[in-house]
Length: 161
Image 1 (cartoon, rainbow, N blue to C red):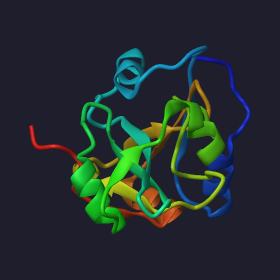
Image 2 (image 1 turned 90 degrees about the vertical axis):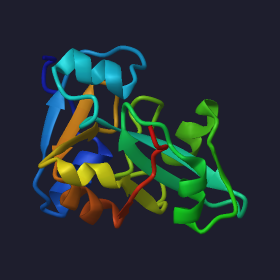
Image 3 (image 1 turned 90 degrees about the horizontal axis):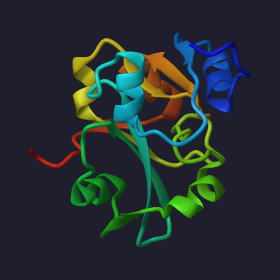
């Protein structure tokens, strides 16, 4: 494991709200997807959640949080957001929209509080792993705490397998 690192906005928000969570830091110099991170840390890839940012036809932005192994169903995402359609934000625009870089993006503590949706599969886990808001950091928390921190909604977001 890496040495202790500085807290991120997401970590500070969880502390300010007195929401239970744990942080873990690891060596990481470049983008790794949720599956690679789970493998590196000996975690379940299904329990390691990624944050995908989409924008809708109305111009609104939305955060969709789903297992690292899953694929976002854009029709379900649009319905959840109340949009006709949504599409993924280009990688080059992630930091401008969220304040976080690719691989360090989390729905907690973004530049703006965009509507957040957590995939219903999270409810099968006591805890989930999400990005800590910076490469090399992650936050471990319950799905209920995540929803409280983000004001999010839980529903099915993934494509049927």
